[in-house]
Image (tube, rainbow, N blue to C red; front, side, top):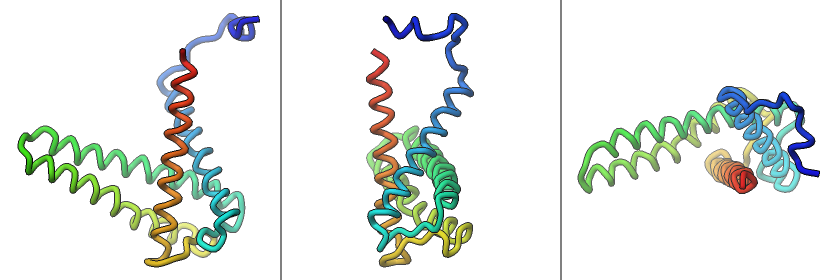
Length: 153
């Protein structure tokens, strides 16, 4: 039996809004899984008091990460339009500055929104564990996207 036989006859391709919703919904779920795995297995560095708090934190992190990437792309496109080696250096430097500096902003937003309910412990108020968690989140999302794209064949 083919997979087409399982779909209703009236099945339509998803709209752009539906695809966008699915993308962010999946991103939030991936962030939620990563956050809770770190809270469970790296509890000396990552603390989240409840599942509900981790869900809210995953939503906030997804919004902040997407905003960071949008700012980085905007900065990168500004310098990409200009030629020369120095502008290439500036593009790389400012992209790094935005990506690295945003982690401090994210840490502060999490601290202000959730207080003691979400904590990252370690040097510089837990910035290193936060960076590790965010990198793993991004890698997990990228892995899922790659698997999804391979399934389109």
